[in-house]
Length: 257
Image (cartoon, rainbow, N blue to C red; front, side, top):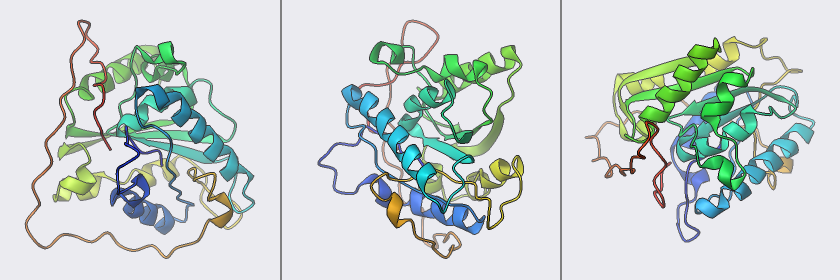
């Protein structure tokens, strides 16, 4: 699971403690998969290249772990972590069997200027299975770039699996207490369904912290808890700036999960 950002160094609650990721890890474990979370180095626009390298290092560490199937790894990108997605769509690293994005910022035309691959350009040419989870009310700078990626893939005849979540917002699994959000958030079944069944000898996995790869632990899956009280107010939604072109550029210095 590849979190969003940028995440300032002084932020007390680090990404691995954000509530969505332990919950998604439980869903993965319940499906018989290895679910892993790590923290990459995306702290500002200048560190996106560092973050990409962190993802590659985590991927290599997990593939080397004898407890997982190194040829069936899935990369799952969230929010602004989606800026890193294109670099793993083209070229597709060894062992990557599928790529997913949940409310992901899937690309930006300025990414090649800093050595990254624009996912909007890479996705139509990539052949790795791709799934996107798209909340109806995502951030106004993410919606148009998601639409642009899907349009490019459709024009190229490239299949993309899409889960639309009605009425949902960015980070919906944390901020939306609705049945649609609960039913729409786990792409696990959709991903696993396109691959052979999981057995004790064959595991489908997602990457982990390269510093934690030697300490992967099995955890008993827990059912996601439903809030019984009133839904807490959602935090203000950051607004990005629109480029003169049809594509919305990423906002500078905006923290997103």
